[in-house]
Image (cartoon, rainbow, N blue to C red; front, side, top):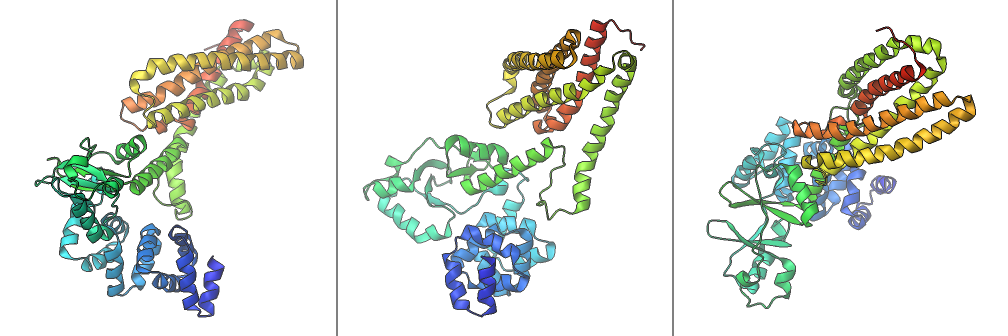
Amino acid sequence: MEDEVIEFIKKRKFNSLKKYLQSVNSADLPSLFEELDDEKKLIVYRLLTKEKAAEVFAELDPDVQEKLINGFSDKELKNVIDELFMDDTVDLIEEMPSNVVKRILRNIDSVDRKIINELLNYPEDSAGSIMTTEFIDLKENMTVEQALAKIKKIGLEKETIYNCYVLSASRKVRGIIDLKSLVIAEKDTIIKNIMETNVITVTTLEDQEVVAKMFDKYNFLALPVVDMENRLVGIITVDDAMDVLQDEVAEDFEIMSAITPNEETYFKTSVFTHAKNRIVWLLVLMLSSIITGAIITKYEEAFATVPILVAFIPMIMGTTGNCGSQTSTLIIRGMSNDEVELKDYLKAVWKEFRVAILVAIMLGVANGIRIIVQYQDVQLAVIVALSLLGTVILAKFLGCTLPMLAKKLKIDPALMATPVITTISDMCSVLIFFKIATLILGLEVNL
């Protein structure tokens, strides 16, 4: 697509380019703007229809938006802002530098500027911070004909028309009605008689991640947001909820990998920032491995007596870490989906204990056969099998316990994922391995 667009511009076939852009889906155009230089970005943007330009602009990366704004005249900037929905305008203001924000605010009328300031004052990560104030509200005593007439009149200015909210004189939610119900109803039907009165709402201060999960649970297209006096102040649409879930998943992946979360994309984050986001946890995990080293040093006499024991350390540590990571991943995912709760702790531990027994038996048998065949040493096979049994059970216990403990302490459970679990498991597995070995072999260890 990039080559075709550049070719159109070189040959100055702007009418052909305009027709070509009209045939391209709006969702595919943001990636095009990433590749074009600043001059071509402006040319392409100005050839888009007003509706498509607004859709594309809202999905562009902040740095591309800034470059376009810097190339816009005030009239062009006002046209862009007028076409954006309120929540997209708020997102734009939050991402832009102060000099650009001042210019944007100059091109917004006083009424909209007041609404924007109110939205900006909501706490970060709250429902209020991601809602839009552009929705369809109806009255209980309206007829279906009157309701459809209102939707036709103002629908283009609203973010969604599929759900309409029936409000009282004090703007409290009386009910909700979807567009399908309006279309198939008789035109003289009173809204009160066909609206859904069991309306699920959230407050402006509700955590946005909780809100996003409600979309998944109830299959919402939009969710009404009320203030502390239960008055409707906005709605959250499904596209914004999906953005929240995507951001939360990305954040959890970074935390699970012992990386400080970062809002910038991979290539837009500087090398220094990447290093800074990783080094703290790497240092902590590296220093914690000193304990593992101390345990190994403590049992160096056992190495001297039975050198073959050293060969099994990587296998024991690796297996233990992998088992712990598997369990922690499943528990963290279960908690994020509200499938696993703190009250389920004993139930989860019992389940993982049974899993650990089965896994340990299979691993122990497999290693036992290998050791007997390779080393003809039944005693060594027993040591490894018992060590695997102990370490796998411990790893499953830690993988289940640590994420739940983190949640209990109001810490992100994702923190207790692979690096942390692996580090703790390494220390414990080495200790269990050599403790079992010294007991079975009758070795004495000088403490």
